[in-house]
Length: 480
Image (tube, rainbow, N blue to C red; front, side, top):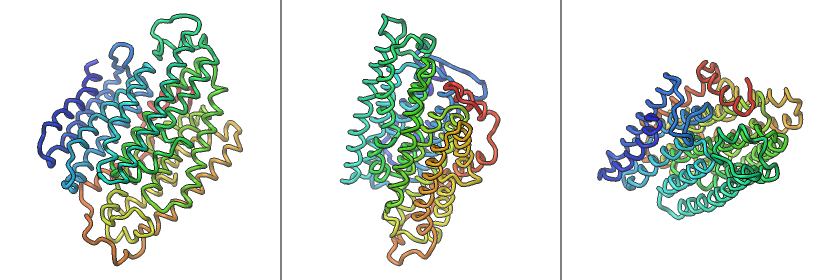
């Protein structure tokens, strides 16, 4: 109980401290302090193999533990980068930015612990409110438009998820009052008595609602603007942390459907949205000219891969959990390096950026390596996770899905290569902003660590992580 409370309260307390600090130079260090304390507590959970809880609404299970660990690791990387980034952006006050990041860490931690569908909805809504001010950090008309679009579309999605939560409550209480309604551990044993029509309605609304938070097509329309206008570290947290929290919400819904014997209804919808997201990403990738929006469509693709793996079940579900981890790490490399490139060249138009490897050697090399990793190329971890999902589809004889899956991956690889390779190589244009910020230790060290982690996971999955991913997959019938 103490650990869970500390994980939730430390970011909130330090958010209050950051509000009181007057110096924009020292305030970002609150992020590092919070991240280190949070990561230390999460590491203690792995060492002691503890499963703490606060009552029945907040407790840790294998799925929550994996997501919580990813949240903590990615936030730690982002916080170290933020110190160097915000030091270079002292013309912009960072009090709201730092405070919102800390509240975001607390809200996403609540998502990982939530065992009650009502609390899960509240926590995911809190992540929207905490992250919206982060999008407006640049204080221009485009970032304002992106912020409002993010709030509007995600609010519609979360409203649909609220209706789905109400329908789930009706499905549970249709035959009479029950104790601990909407509480997942209590719901699963009696899932067989749920009203099937109401459960189906709840599934559709929750899938659309939380799918909007993930950025699944066709509910993805907030992503290109939000990722394109937000600072790189914000895009990193949205693509690696927020989407993982929404994926966890879909996993919780899948647990109920599986216990109720309704996976024959749920799986085709997961597969449909997964393939649709990959297809939409492939189409828009081919005509993309903005390298930050390119990363947004890459995120749409990978959310489709996660949903597809969840829908296929079995081995593919294990692959989806592994892919969630790999995607979060690799997206960190790309978004942070895209931020470095944007600040130096002062443009997001790919055709105006050449010779990054000459002007920003570390950022150029990491951006290229991140592209290789995110497109599922060996020896990086995403190759292993995408191949595992492919094996799951082949093992079940879904040859049409296999063809669509491989076709989308190939098109997206070509589309991204068309943008990234000319950016990294070649001679820089004469009118490039030579005065733009160069690489620094704080803005390249954490992406390098993230890339190393993705590489390691492509060569070797540690036994402790393998066991954790398998336990998470088994909650929804997955296997290795």
